[in-house]
Length: 267
Ligand SMILES: Nc1ncnc2c1ncn2[C@@H]1O[C@H](COP(=O)(O)OP(=O)(O)OP(=O)(O)O)[C@@H](O)[C@H]1O
Ligand SMILES: [Mg+2]
Image 1 (cartoon, rainbow, N blue to C red):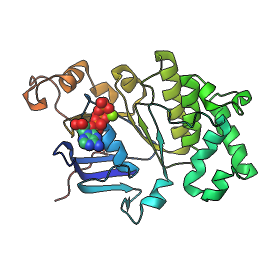
Image 2 (cartoon, rainbow, N blue to C red; image 1 turned 45 degrees about the horizontal axis):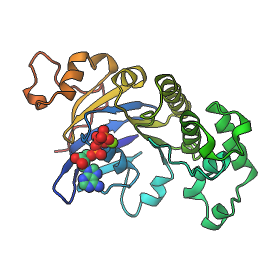
Image 3 (cartoon, rainbow, N blue to C red; image 1 turned 90 degrees about the vertical axis):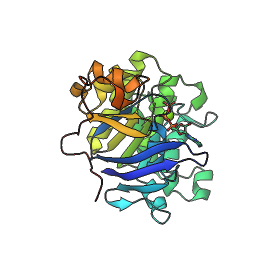
Image 4 (cartoon, rainbow, N blue to C red; image 1 turned 135 degrees about the vertical axis):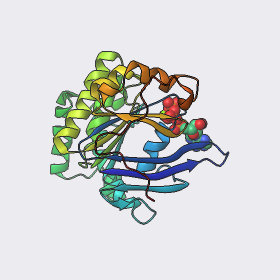
């Protein structure tokens, strides 16, 4: 379970990227975050793995608050899947998947690529589970197609059996068919392990197809929180319209709570 409590972020230049975000993502949920460019989606995700320090508020993972003293431990339970895959292109596919163990591997062992046989087997099993043929194991990651690289990225993310997976536009550069394959893989891997996924997307159709829940953000705020069914064309129009959310036509649905999982600000 990830919990954001009154989370705010103001950048040094005064940009208010997050404003009092309250959100709970239970175990096993695939939560899609949508919203116009600059809405704060990446900033929200980066708050969970400590890449962004909030100005105020808290992030908790299974009840443990992210802080300087807990960050190191919590990072082992959070994995990230990136838009540009973030593989080390000159290294082998196998080495890239094993890099998922770096948070729990002594530096010297990692540098010398000393991994235990069971760790190597896990890397192979994960690669097989994301549909990558074993013949690719020894290839340099840079030789793979974008879709194949993202499969490696998913296998790497699941090496430590994370409780939370953050995916920031994981299919932005992939074609529609491969995008569906990749999102299916993330969803299946997460469901099988009870992992919470927070995934930012720009594709409304994919959000409706893959999200258990959709969170709409604008100007650093959550303006919609509900099921894909409730995320109607009218809501989409309002989410991306130039006008303020409050100024949009009254017949469109108001922001609503996800059943049983929308956190309210504490008194
Ligand atoms: N390091 C930074 N320093 C200053 N401002 C930043 C920084 N990172 C992000 N911002 C600002 O914070 C706001 C939210 O940015 P963020 O990257 O979270 O948006 P986003 O919803 O992910 O957008 P996109 O869909 O384009 O990826 C924007 O106004 C952005 O310019
Ligand atoms: Mg972003």
